[in-house]
Amino acid sequence: MEIKPDLNTRNRLFGWSWAVTSLIAAATLVTGCSDSTKSDTPTSATANAPTSASPTPKAHTLNFTIIGEGRLRVTYVVNGKETTEKAVELPWRKTIHLPAKPGLDTWQLRTQASAKAKVETVVKVDGGVAGGGGYCEGNGCTGDDSGSISD
View (tube, rainbow, N blue to C red):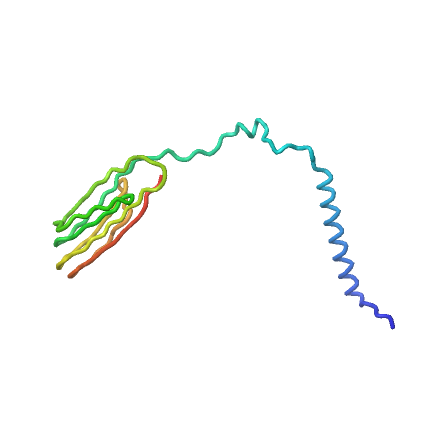
């Protein structure tokens, strides 16, 4: 007994084999036309091409401002260096000048009231608001804000 595939199956098989054969032929032509003696060494035109340079680092000014009512414990951390000021009267401001350097400058501002307080924080970098906007009111009020600066 002989089994004959129906006409649709035979056409699908022929179509696939034709497509595969065409792809192999095209790959052979492309490979055959390549220059196997070509060197991986850049030519003088590409060797002298300018590379993209990193932006020149800039100095920055970081301003912490806390307004409201009450006394606070304020801790600020800039590039890993932590400073704590106890029993701070509001309003309180601190300006930190950051020298130009590549990479990120990081900052964090934490506040903690030991008694009833109303506290609002604003952090600015080079005059633009970079953080803060935090507000708390009540006994033992706390706040925490952080960010980074890059050129």
